[in-house]
Image (cartoon, rainbow, N blue to C red; front, side, top):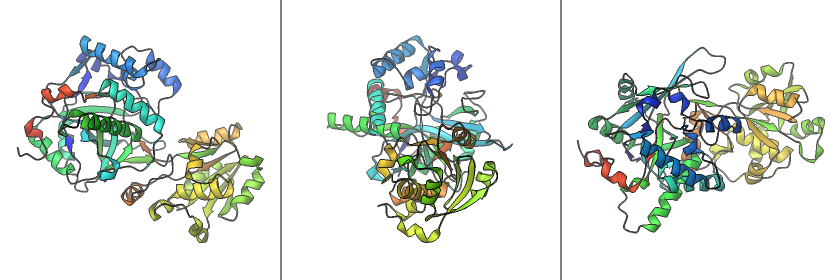
Amino acid sequence: MAEIQPVRGWRYNAELSAHIDDYVSPLFDVVSQKQREALYRNELNSIHLSVPRGEDPAGAALARLTEWQNAGVLRQDELPGIYVYYQYFRLPGSSREYCRKGFMCHIRAYDWSENVVLRHENTLPAAVNDRAELLARTQFQTSATHGLYRDDDFELERYLDEAMQDPLYQTEEDYQGARDVLAVIQDAQVIRRFQQVLSRREVILADGHHRYEGSLAYRQARLLAEPGHTGREPWNYHLMYLTNAAADDLRILPTHRLLLELPGGLSDAEFLARLEPYFTQLPLDDAYDLPERIAGKPWAFGLYLGGQSFKLRLRPEVHAQLDWDTTPEVKNLDLTVLHYFVLEKALGIIGPDAQRSWPGVAYVRTFSECLSRVDRQEARAALIVNEVTMEEVERVCHSGAVMPPKSTFFYPKTIGGFLFTSIRDDEHDNGFYAPHFAPDSGL
């Protein structure tokens, strides 16, 4: 189903790559303003291409990209390849070192209706337009989105491990504490095997919905402008990091909800009273017990309110009241239950669209931050949730529906500046579409 192609990657030159930590950057939608300002001070940091600034940000990015290419700051590899990308990381409270294994390549930018690349969340039009404008001006991709394919036989991992014996470079530690390692596979027969495996797979978009939709928008514009297109033009493709959904090292972290306000001036007692018809409420002595007390329990949540802690659990008989127009797979999610019975029924924020735009909720990944912000009276309450499972993500995607906002946080994030790719028209002439790499040919 999914067509992938090798790329002739653009990378920092050998001298700069030896200090790659100085030039990589967080993704545009997770970098904080403080991080941005520190990175902008480095004139060669990739953030100048991925999150440009100024009156004409996309124009500034194009000017800088042209300058870097002419000066040899960025150099293009001679041969097309599939780029192996490993991320080594640890989770809080665990001594285990995980290694998420994957590879970067170009994938055809399939429209959602083609059901090859599947989404699990909605996007914001303004953010999509920003990414599409940047891509249209630079025709350059600065960071890979994250896609998931399922291969229970782990057929490709041996090729990935073999390539990792001779890495191109690695970070010491990126902004999130992970160690990122890059290698490349340029053997035509091995690349052909990657293409064959992916040609039988759907891909779930784990992270990077706005960047992917930016590629879709740019491709659609080019299709309309060029009625004689062949379908092989480089702008038909998108840079993606693909990992195996069957792997144990694929981690999804929870994203908790902070209630910055209680609508209508509700008191703490009134809020609890509004929850009572829907949830059992078990007071706990120690707020730090909340994650353990809800772990693995469906429709269970932690509530931290006014210095008090409660385990909430949906009364099973009320679940049938959940009448949103969505699939059973979405209705069964913890976060759908939370958004419907807490935000809509208890707080009166009616419907997913109103909840998505309501300024009274914030999304926080760190449990301790939730507690401290309530204690500092920066928020009225914290709702602690379990992580979404990979099986739930797959079920929702295959049902054709989307999850509530901020349902998944795949960890760690990919980084910008580790590998760049071009979708300029002249990429036709550099081996990108060499015949022996075409997906329907033999080797």
